[in-house]
Image 1 (cartoon, helix red, strand yellow):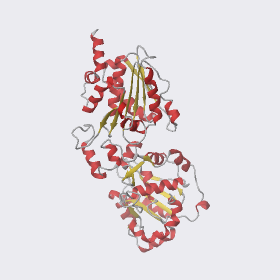
Image 2 (cartoon, one colour; image 1 turned 90 degrees about the vertical axis):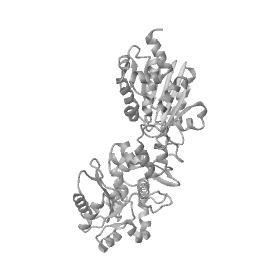
Image 3 (cartoon, helix red, strand yellow; image 1 turned 60 degrees about the vertical axis):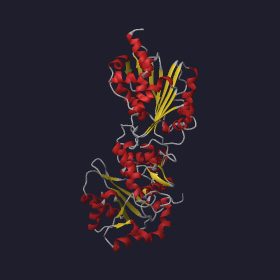
Image 4 (cartoon, one colour; image 1 turned 120 degrees about the vertical axis):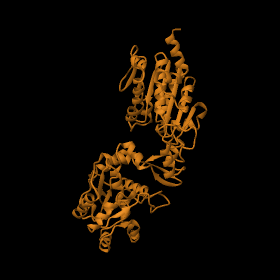
Length: 485
């Protein structure tokens, strides 16, 4: 056996050595556990907290299989095309560039990695399915793939359907060596990752990865201060913390608030004035917290949300002037401003100087239906979504659509709880300011007559507990707030 062949054989049996030799890095303890088990383990699942380096581990295993098996076929799939492209596929390119051997031997393209000498029979392909695909269409992503040496890699499998796993399992029946490797966050109580960790655990090697700041074996790449902060802010039993910090399945799965088709349908609806009738006109104002965020005014007239007004880099005086002009020009009956963290206080004070009485809303404050919703933010979001489902009309706005369909909810105890706003921002690439402004129009029930009485009593800003007298009028607004659920 030549020296080169001997080296390849050693790397085949000890992938952790390959990582050290080719890339010059030291794997974390859980990464080493996975690499050492890989050669002799047909099914491996990584149940992970947020940010431990699981995509890196998958990339190392793919390169090991490509380099050390003859004419292998590897199919890599994720929950959607963008996720695969931006994470695992980019990670594969990163590690190839770290190794002169891999760079010389293989070619990386946007859809395929192949051996230069055997491009038709020695490869790894990026597989994807449409977000709207049903189970049969998802299964077809991996169906029909056969080889002596075959490997399936499922990234973010926590959100995949069982159909994907069934297709991968079928290919193991006729191969010389086959592997199914999956990794994901434990967000759902169904699907391939959940099954591997529960009812099918006897046939899976499950590696649990967490960022618990008190665990000496925690994943080092998870920022310990961030983990402590999340625990302090939300509590150890918070489902979001269980998933993202401790890498544990929550008591119930995370769910999206509303689907994209429902939002797009709402954005095609537009009600004329005679259809709206005498419904109140309400302004919701989300004040930008940081330089890259946007201050947004959402005007809602009963069942119709009008086009959103957006401005960047404006101070309290400018913002208050903008709101006051819209208030007067449109004849609004009330205005709700996000006062969370004090960011909206300057706007509220400046509006008071202009003779307006906006209502400051604390997103973390107590919900009216406190037996159902964990806080005011969650209650407003559900009211907004129920209003959409009941026939509300929305303006065409890509940022609003992205925030609506990417915001998830779960439970704290038996109460609905939304995922943190900062995590929605990470997912969609911008702050969900449009969503916040729209949901603020549902902070309190309001009528035109009551709004005029409130303005006549005082020009000072009021907190929403001043609306006790509005409870008797809530039934009128219920048509638009979706309280029929």
